[in-house]
Length: 210
Image (tube, rainbow, N blue to C red; front, top):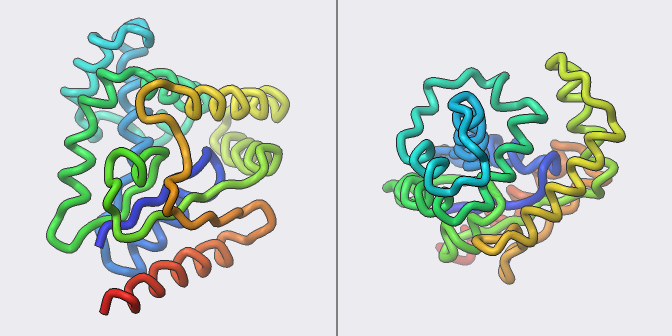
C-alpha cells in the first residue's frame, strides 16, 4: 500500500505521515529532506542554487548520513530546498530514488508536495494537508525558536508566502492537490485529531479493497 501525503510547509503533514507509517507498519520517507539536503550541500560547496546541472550533480551523489537533522531544519535550509526543488534536473535526479522507495514489497508512506501528482500518481491513498498561512507560520516559528533560530514571525510568514508561491508555480512538478486526494485542513485541529482523520481515510480505502 502506497500512501502519498502532500501539502504545505508546517501544515502538519510530516508528523501525520510519520505517525501513519508507524501505525500501519510501513516504511516512511520525508522527501522534503532530500531537497533540503541538496540545498544545504550546494550552499556548502558554494554552488549557485539556480545552476540546475551542478545542483543536480549534488543531488545525484547525496548521502543523507552526511547531514545533522538540525542543519536541515533551519529557515535557510527550507528556502534553499524550495529553490533547488524548482530545478527540473534536480527533480529528475531524485525522482527514481523516491519511486524505488515507494515500490517496496509492503509499500510505503511518502510526504512531500508532488507525491500524489508526479512521484506516485497511482498511490492507493492520497492526502492533501493544509492550514492557513498565519497558523503555519506560528507553528514553524515556535519550532525554529526552540532550535535557536532568531528569525522573526513577520519574516517567516513572508518566507512561507513566497515559498507557497514558488512551489505552486514552478514549471516542473508544481505543488498542488491531486484531483483524487482527500483534503485535511489542520488550521483548527490538534495533531492527534488530524492523524485520526488521516487514519480514518486510509482505513476506509483498505476496507473497500478487501
